Image (cartoon, rainbow, N blue to C red; front, top):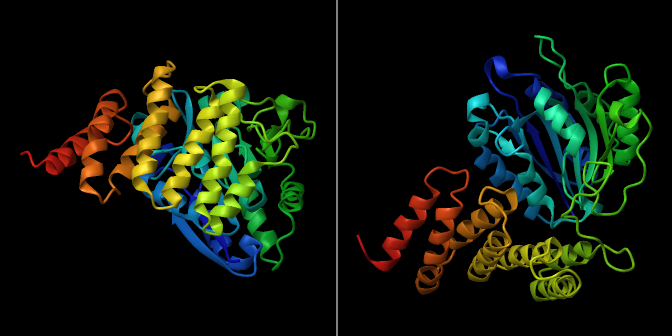
Length: 387
């Protein structure tokens, strides 16, 4: 089966630029697509200094939905949204004042990859952090999801005026130009060996979830992950969802059923996990809500926009009722996805039925896209035949 490769290199224009991210793309582009992917054939999507986070999200979403192995190579710089304390990947138009609207929230990457299996999904990253992002990641980690293998490094702020070089990613590309892609762990270690001096002080990411190790971890190699719920931090996050009783990851079976077009089977598997989570942890627990979200995405993959929209509305309402803030990432993501699916509904009556609930949610959760509420209200007036 062909693989998919997404090459994302981004950094701001002007004085906010910390690293020459796009400079790595010619080196990566010189590598054969099949080698970048580790498959017989592969499709490559290249994003060089993109301007809009929504455009990046669209490409990432399409890549994540494509059957077959997926490798995402990300080079750039991380900044912290001071209001919400969330890491963002800076894009070409990003400035400190416009970070929330012009940078890519890191949790968007996590959300788009969460339905995929760690067996066929990998992130290879070379990231440079500013002082605030570096401090935050050292304390909280960089959550890239529980079903994604992550390899690479996060470099600390240098304090120098000259642009940093994405030395790790360039070294990875150079190694791949040999025409062979070894297992990613081996590739990662080979790259680090070549840039040992420059990588000093960096946080090094390796394995499923990408447990970091570096100066804050005493310089010791990473310990085995505590389980599929382990994020990019030494200990799991509160929203981690454990694997099944035998340690098997149910996401892998679900993903395989989706790739084979067996959408009813995939939903059945997820529904059983949801029911078990409700019995064990409660209907508004992160465990149960995770599987509700999985089922909402499965409805999208099956082409059932009505069911997907309704389920995302339910998830958003449940999170808000549980006391989560309207600007919490999980709440925003649920409303955004409900909105996206609502715009895909072709049955006018069904769209008219779900529109008021979406509009009410948009009053509480305006999201990051300017004019989202106005967009719902305008389309709802058109559906209802009112001026």
